[in-house]
Amino acid sequence: MRALNVAETVASTPMLRDAFKQKEPHVRIQPFAEEVRRKTGAEYVVVGNKEGIRYSHPFPNRIGKKMVGGDNEEVLLGKPIISEAVGSLGPAIRGKAPVFDEHGDVIGIVSVGFLIEDIQTIVWSYKVKIFLLSILALLFGVAGAIVIAKAVKKAIHGLEPREIGLLYQEKQAILEAIREGMIAVNSDGFITMINKAAMSMLGYENENDVLGKYILHIIPNSRLLEVMRTGKPECDAEMVLGEQMVIANRIPIVDQKGKVIGAVSTFRSKSELYRLTKELSQLKSYADALRAQTHEFSNKLYLISGLIQLESYEEALDIITKESNLQQDIVRFIMSEIPDPIIGGLLIGKFNRANELKIEFDIDRESSFKDIPKRMNRDNLVTIIGNIIDNAMESVLRNQRKEKKVTVFLTDLGEDLIIEVEDTGTGIPQEVGEKMFERGFSTKEAADRGYGLDLVRKSLEALHGHITYQTELGRGTLFTIMIPKQR
Image (cartoon, rainbow, N blue to C red; front, side):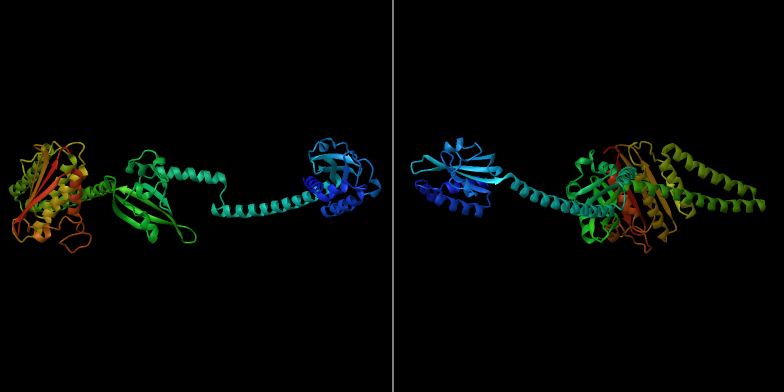
């Protein structure tokens, strides 16, 4: 292209056309062609007429001789060409252009050539440069790869791909083995991890419906963003998740530089925690009942032993008969009218506890509690009955009246379960009645109080029941609880 451009430029020069009209064209053309050759770096700039007779040449003794190469036909037809041919100086890449007169007729040819040998020299110099640059780029690439490999190795704690894969499988197995729900988000608040327990609580079946979603779109009341903002963990916090109450723990994820890069939360249904708590409470209740019974019967045995030593055999026999009949009577009645072992066991335990505290504990003989729906959570029933009876006995003990009595009535007639607990205690002041179902509120100064009636309220909410009470200061209180058999 360079040879052709030079040839076309020379061919279009007016001086060149004028020189063709002179008697000896080479006198003007030769110096002009040589000047062009030197300035453009071409191997030769040859100008010839239509017959191919040279008017210029790098070797002046060749002027007037015929051009060689045999590639002038197309040029004489008025077409510029690029060709590779062997000229008088050797193999060359040549650009040839026609010279036109003022009428547009071809009157000559301009041939500009670069020897192939020179071109190879130029190409080789570029090859050397490309080769050196390639080596340099390769060295930089190797160095960069080493630096990146070290950084990646450090980031993955020196683990090999196989070890990373094994850790991932172990992590998935651990996540699915955890019964608590678990969910993690990145620094932008998008979910990066969730286990099956969490998906079940949220009502999803496919993790792809959750992964990558914004946390507030899935859990609108989530506090994970707040935990990331403050960098402070939150432990054992209550929150509503879907239709259930859960206990949640939230912990920020911090990198080696101390920057918060995400957060993880674990949560578990509060009802499960209640169940575990109630199992422990039942065990404690049974233990207290056995302790009370042991203590009470030890006193009775000492009394009977003393009467026998005093040879008061009839009195001893009366006490034995009375105690035996009383215990057997309450057990027979509960087994007959309150066959549910959980409720029955609770009432027997409270009966023995009341005997120990010198409180008259009476279960109304009109009671019947047989028709308890199977779907109804017994733990909630234990929580309700147990806490109301405990409060009644505490109220009775605080009263200065001689009569200390707690009466329980249970019935399953109709569409509701009805539980009544009446006591001869101190009664409930109005200002206390307005707050007594609030969490943490208590008229007692001891620590860790004020949770019993709050548990009663939440258990009633779970069973869709409600509670009312009638009270008279100094004379006692009657609590009435109604729980529908069907929602």
